[in-house]
Image (cartoon, rainbow over all chains, first blue to last red):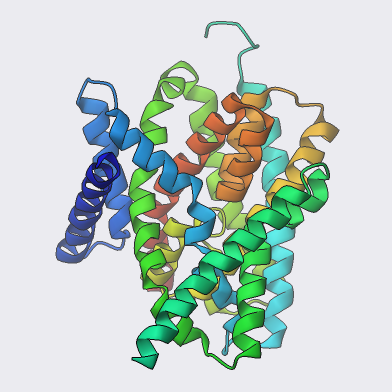
Length: 119
Length: 235
């Protein structure tokens, strides 16, 4: 019952987000708009997140890898990616991820107040 | 009737492959580098595609049978608002370091990937599909579709990015001498989204919390800025 209640709320926000994305014609995915709306609703409700909603949300997030398994399988069935695109794709991913990790970590370390210190 | 049966079997295939992939992942618990490479998002799709190829079933039919998961990806995106809300008090306390690192990390991830791919001879379609690479998959798929990339390629790019980030991240942090799990978590969340976040929860609860914060904030920031940027540059 709690799971159903949580799912109903999440799907409601998903639907509102899809509706806004469609009607307003803005290039932001509907579920993202739904996420922002739910976040704002939680922030401004001034009460604890209902336990049933929290539990449903966390179980969904826990099984995220299962949910994107079918989408990821599509990587092996790309008909129109030519061979010469694999080097730019792999190179960009490895090098860019490495650089971003390195620079973002250094930057954040510079900006962080020392552990235990109240900023 | 046989069509209905085929759909059910293809749906069951996803569950079976995921269960096997999860078992394989957990069996390698003691070997962090190997385990990161064995993430269910790497081995699961490999198993499914091997079976599809062996049985001569085309991907479209499999995709059609697994519509449920594509729908639930959207629902889970909405659910990301919950950890984001629960961790939000960190933002007001560490507002400056978090926001500056987020804006730098999220934009540098996209910009550096595009520049490197372009230098290596990537086509426009490749560049567009690469752009959402550091965003969590449910958001990236929706984005890629919206901005005219190939969602299937984007899905692969995102998974690959996550695995690279989750494998290289701990090595880089060790090399830099960074032990603060707030930094490790947040930066991993920005760069390696869901795969990195799973990894961060293994380090500590606080590390995982900061990773989901980074994942959620990067997703929101990129989702709201990238479509406009692509329209701006392509038109």
